Amino acid sequence: MAYFNNETVLYFDGQFSKASETKIDLYSQSLHYGYAVFEGIRSYKTVSGKTKILEAKAHYDRLKRSAEALNLPYTYETETLIRHTYDLLEKNNIQNAYIRPLVFAPDNMSFNANNVSHLVIQCWEQPKFLGEKLLRVGISGFQRPNPQAFKIYAKAAGHYVNSIMASQEVKSKGFDEALLLDQHGYVAEGPGANIFIEKDGKLFTPSLGYILPGITRQLVIELCEELEIPVFEKEINVSELKQADAAFYCGTAAEVVGFESIDEYKFPLKWSDSVSAKLQNAFNKLVIAD
Ligand code: PMP
Image: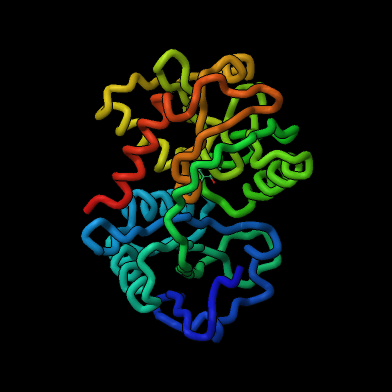
């Protein structure tokens, strides 16, 4: 996939510049050690034709928390970044976009802290996902990182080596996507999405602590309350998962996507009959609502 062409504009350190003419320092501490933080944000063309960045404030607030967690200098105001992001979408003439802000370190081959950091915001076209295809998910042999080894609530670039390893491992076995357990063997999350399981009309999702606190996860919990679907945060073990009626991933990129199976276990409830599907419909409406 080509993420940019000669016309593409990005936002870099306070200015809009052409992607094809913007350079980064190959001695950046981020490139060598994965020491950077980022966000994944989505914008949608709403029913009335406007551009809407979904949960923009929550994403830029999390970017700030992530930078602070890793000790990366962060001097930006959420409101200003949201404004620049809308400008960026307009300059690139994109409404349905994936937006990727990245805060990274300057040239520094040591492990010492930095006085400055860089911020780039990129965006590219992301058509609305309307696929009904259910995922065949495999449990990875890789666990999510130990929260005493990483600030697990931060969306840090280096954490994604774990996601990449897990995803590649299960895809090489023929699955569509991975599920990772935590260090105690409880269900944690996907490489880039949070999980919910459905049992007897109720939804369950892993508690915070070993997972990225997903913004979509929070939206799903709020939607459940509106739809009067009982939802609980708790530790979930693999046998509960493999006795569930249905399950789904949710995330900015994934949106809400149902599971067909986990390892050899096929979820028994027809997706369209599940409360999860009801939730998915509500989510799909919410993202394009004015
Ligand atoms: N977990 C991980 C590891 C992720 O990378 C993501 C995607 N950011 C999520 C969960 C879902 O988070 P969100 O809904 O904020 O996109």
